[in-house]
Figure 1 (tube, rainbow, N blue to C red):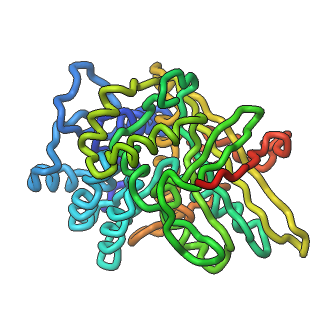
Figure 2 (cartoon, helix red, strand yellow):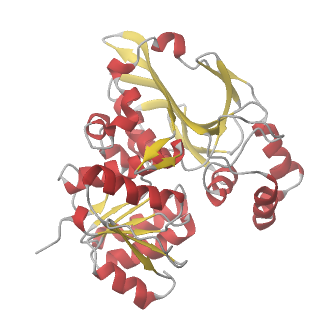
Length: 381
């Protein structure tokens, strides 16, 4: 008999996000998970988290770990995604990951026609929850003209020259700042350049900037092609960050030397656990023959989880992942093949055990939404 997927979960990667997923599963579901990492496990024991030292480059060891579980959550860097997904598909193990990498998602999708289990990449925040929100807003209009999706993982106190502190993966940041970005422009599926499309956004009286970054839309462009005139995803940052990164990537040509770029950023930009996540989405279109706009915005801050402070990006990414996993485990998503984030409805996500993390995205939670709505002011560069 097939195990209940929630009772046989393997989490790969015991870093910030992987360990938060394990803690959230324990806190909200009271279930244990196997948390695997290449590094030796700490001495401290946890009755709900089984530690495993595992090198995923060892085919036999990875296969043995997969055979003991019904579902694997890949919280490793994006360049590990295709390898783990291929092994999971071979063993009939349900596969979920956090990747924003378009090429990795394409490789995973190619496995789906023969898959006995689910392949659901791009879970998390962006891609992930933002796609669910975008799909929800798109469904509120008879004819959709514009859908603007903006997400920022930001330090609360941006005091350095880059106006940025690391709150998540350096590799992920470089990936989204250097790769082409999917968009729909004038009804046509296209790609735009990262760091371009700079805009100034005012949210609750605070100024942010937004610019193109790669991977945040997941498969939403494909899903909404033919239904929306313009669709864009941009990352929110504190003003001045984009110009500093443009100097590094283009002025100093470090986009062509990503290993050196990583060394520079790792040595110069501190990590911070004092962060916030900002989600802002605006849809404009026709409803009952009238041009209308609907906006959802929310700020999310860090909070304790199982007695330890977790950052906003850790909580929201882990919650996006476990929301998708719960919807799958309870039969509200397809049970095999490739699954897109927008197949999770926003209302279904909010009804899961992680839904409270995104409570501010409810329609009835948008008190004063008009005054808090982000106002884009395009700055063409």
